[in-house]
Length: 135
Image (cartoon, rainbow, N blue to C red; front, top):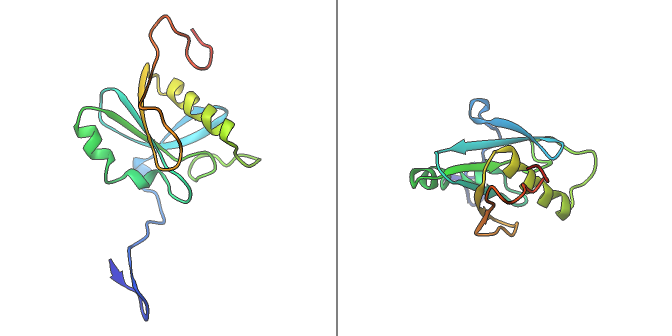
C-alpha cells in the first residue's frame, strides 16, 4: 500500500497484463484470453465486474499446488479477450462457460466465481454428450 498525496492510503493497481503469461482460446465465437497453472482436474475461476482474471493471482498458484489445472479467463468484453459487437447477457455468459469447458478439453470441472454462480462440479462421462452437442 502506498500513501496518496493528500489522501488515504491506496493499493497499487495493475493496469497491464504481462503478454508472456496470457494464453488464448476460441470459444463460443470469441477469442478468450486466460491464465493457466497446474495439472489435474480443471478448476475454472471467473471474475466479476469490475475485476479481471488477475483477481485470482494470489489464489491460482495455491489451487494449482493442490493438484489442479487452474484456468482464470478474462470474460467476454474484458481485454485482452475479444470485445463483442453487442452487450453481453447472462445466457451468453453461460454459453461461454460451457464452450470454454469444451475448448479446454475437460470432462470434469470445478468452478469458482466472484459474481457468477458456479456449480461445485460439473462432470460428464463418455456416455454423456458434451455441452456443445459434440459426441
